[in-house]
Amino acid sequence: MTDLSLSKGDADAAALEQASEARAAHGAGVAYADGEDHDHTLTNTGISNPKLAMWVFLGSECLLFGGLISTFLLYKRNNLAGGPTPQELYDIELTSISSFVLLMSSLTMVLAVSAIQRGEHQRLRLWLVTTAILGAVFISGQVYEFQVFVKEGMGFTTNSASSAFFALTGFHGVHVTLGIVMLLSAVMMSLRGRIPQARAEAVEIVGLYWHFVDVVWVLIFTIVYLIP
Image 1 (cartoon, one colour):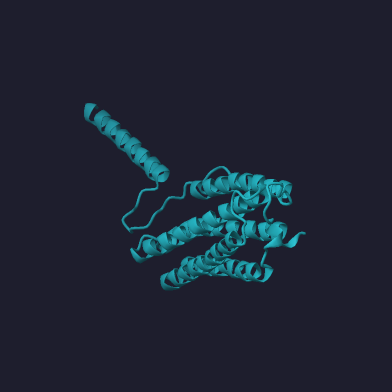
Image 2 (cartoon, helix red, strand yellow):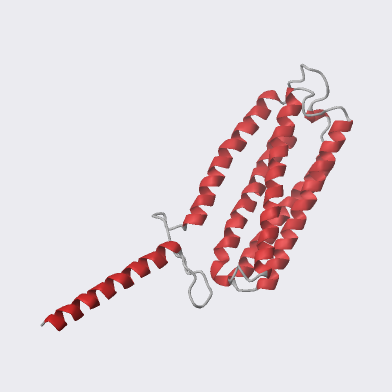
């Protein structure tokens, strides 16, 4: 009887240990023998923790851009300190071209996400690099525009309108630059084999950020450049 009791106790202990390991594996997203990340941890919304964190971050960014856009609308004609206002120096043709280039980068980002979902790693890297190049072209156009504005006598502190303009568009440019860094980081991780098809969500999260940056620019371009 004693041996049977001990065997049953050992079996219960082993079952408890296995259950604990299973919970730890599910919660921590450990790497299994096949080398793929099996982390399927979902929140109550049905969205994974990393993707939900990105959505929360983008929500906070909406508030920040909303404040910058509101500030620009309040001060866009305020040149009490002298100097030109942004409206007097706009080059709509140049900005329209750079805006079109940035919008096309959303298309290449979609193609990158589609490629990793099909397990096509070379196409993934191709579209990620293409997206980064298009973003760099947009940033180059913005730097050129800022340089022209400064030559025309409108610096950051020239008047309230110029401060609001440079703060808004410059802050967006910083976001695009960070997006380019994220894209190139994803390319490097893909080259090292750290983005298998099972981790396609990592590329999707980068895509969420990139699409957000594009959508915000459409709003900025409309409000700042097109509306008189």
